[in-house]
Amino acid sequence: MARISFFLIFCIAVISATGALADDIVVVVNQKNGVNKLSKDEVIDIFLGRNRQLSSGVTALPLDLPGVSPERETFYSRLTGKSMSEINAYWARLIFSGRASPPTQVRSQEETMQMVMDNRSAIGYLERSKVSSQVKVVYELGAK
Image (tube, rainbow, N blue to C red; front, side):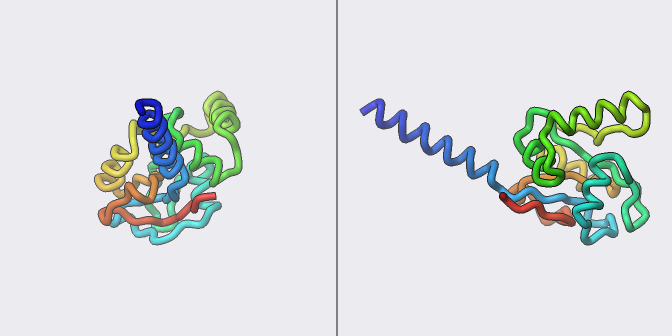
């Protein structure tokens, strides 16, 4: 009986974790930012340090989740088709050469949401389920 209960709890936990990882990832900005939509290329340019100027004229402040975050891995994989080791190597080269600096790292999706709400320049990514009406979705990376 205890084995069956443990097995059921384990299955529910695995299904819940899998569902969270399969959630759509969206890119969000402050409601007052002036940008309503971004293309995939624009999002790539912002998060890879190629361009930090938004079409509204606002300088973008990209926010990145911690390196161990499954949402971060999902975001970069879906956006660029690259693994986190490739993304980390890319940033190591740019930082070493002094050509660009990586996005500002935050601790959680909740902190991303708060910073985007509080800062007109902030741009971040979240699971769709974490988005509130106080931010604007400008790009969607659907589940693969």
